[in-house]
Amino acid sequence: MEITTTNRSNLIYWALILIMAIRICSYFTLFPDSVGVTRVVKIGLRFMMTGISFALLWVVQKKLKEYIFHYTNSMAVMLYLCYFLLGMLSILWSTEVHFTILQLLMLFECIVFICFYYKLQILYDTATNGHCPMSLILGFSITLISIGFLIGLYVDPSTFYRDTHGGAVSRLGGFIINPNELGMLAVIGATMNYVQLKNGGRKVPITLAWAINVAVLLLTQSRSSLGAFLLVTLIFVLISGNIKLQMGTVVAGIIVLPILVQTIIIKDGDVGEVMSMTGRLPFWSDLITHGFPDRPILGYGFMSISPSPFTNKFDSIHSYAASMTHNTFVQVLINLGLVGMFIVLFQMIATFYAAFTSKLKDLKLMGLSMLIPVMINSATEFGIFGEMNYGILFYHLIILFYVIHAKKKPLVITKNYFRTDHQYAYG
Image 1: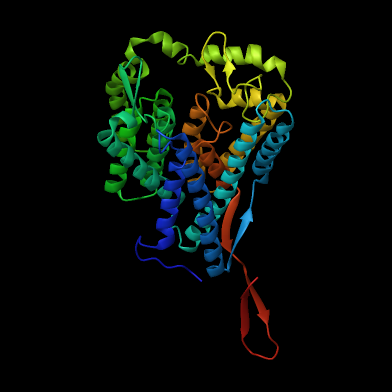
Image 2: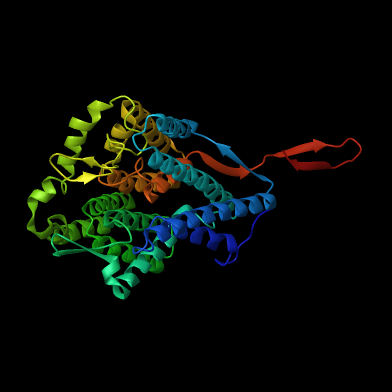
């Protein structure tokens, strides 16, 4: 049977949006004053969203028995499972066993959630002839979150703002989420707005949502996310084929870029900070020079970068001490060694190959445009192979774009020799 919809009030439609919004919020520090309460709420929200997704998928599958799932590009999934399996094995040699187990459990739960959730979305969207595309879900849910941060900025600025550079710079995100991570989220929201506009969505509400997401991006003052946004914007302008829009973008870029360089890129006039990537370059140098040679083959254990079992931080000689590398690829090299790095490299190649060779133009564009902010963020923060964050959630989603598909079962015509008509059944 077909699910018919005459308006946007369908229960599954709103459930998909709310589940995604709540799931993303489960990665925030919702109660900055209480670490214990935050952890309980985070775990509770994630398991709740996974359980609801499973229940809704079960109900919808019961209703839509004539639809089936089919799978392609299995190599991307198989290689990711190899990465996860190596992480499980690393419990045997991890220098921080408890943290390794915790991160593996959270990663497993994320994999389970996204499988249930994406199956629910693709099944519902197929049965309703494109009533609820993923670009709409992500664009809507991220915009709701962006509105929440803008409200929080005025209601409780001390929590939602983070002062840096001796108080000279204030960044949206505060104690709730790393500003760079929030910037990446805002870029994905704006990217989904671009996809909706390209697909003929309503211009006024989509443009308003885009403006909200861009406002949040600028308030985070995230340089990496700003670069990702400019690159994504350039791509969509180029493929639009609109000469006036392209010329207008060039003029706007000439006017706006100097302001962005002065206010966001070179913060407080410190060029040296930009050149060292806020101390990241010397930290990476120490990790590779002094940390990597000790365990080059299998690393220190999943999400562990410390050579000592008594601390979870790598104490850099020329920079700060930290429990994560601020680069997802260096993270893999240190915690899973060369074996993990080769698995991750081939897994990304398989994912990019699936995206570039996809015959579904909308999914190809959406996946590749999402990969830009996610990959740029991965070069400077937690990233797609780092400690659990919603960047990993988005990467799982991108992989599944090209793996799981829904379609109707083919009709099988059966002939009944005792009747003059034919009988039709779904095979």
